[in-house]
Image (spheres, rainbow, N blue to C red):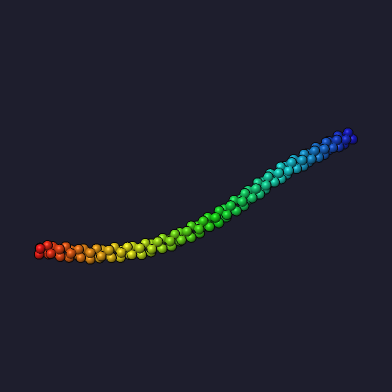
Length: 132
């Protein structure tokens, strides 16, 4: 009986050790699971924050692209207008140049006529002076 009592006592100790070990394992597993949940939660939160930042950056990038496109269109319009104005100025300048050339030719012709008349007057005076 003593042997049986000792065996029962030993069995009880082993059962208690097994329960304690099982409980320690459960507590350790629970702690590890809590830690894993905390790490995953933090990672998820970081990913959500990065996702929000990336979304914001994408929105800004799209807006910047729209602004640059509008500036490009505006620049293209300004260039086209400047080209048209330049062409109109060149055309007007060409007309003024032709008018100036005609005016200069007209004055040159008039001066030539006046010079010829003046030379004829001078020759006539010279001839009159020779007669005298």
